[in-house]
Length: 88
Image (cartoon, rainbow, N blue to C red; front, side):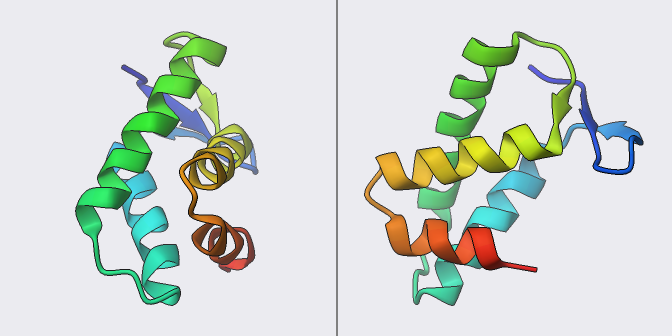
């Protein structure tokens, strides 16, 4: 789907879906969640929204973060969204 992601410092790296899953799962675990499959489902939702908004081009890390927050809130995971936002 996506090949690259542009980091905050301007570097372009290979896009890795697993990084999104891991970030969502870490935020969920911070709230007591243990369902990695749910993090994977949320990631799929994020990627679907990204495809609608950005096509198959390069994503910006900030866009990914915004879409993760939107997906989590839409999915009823507001506490996880908050943990994701404040995660260092």
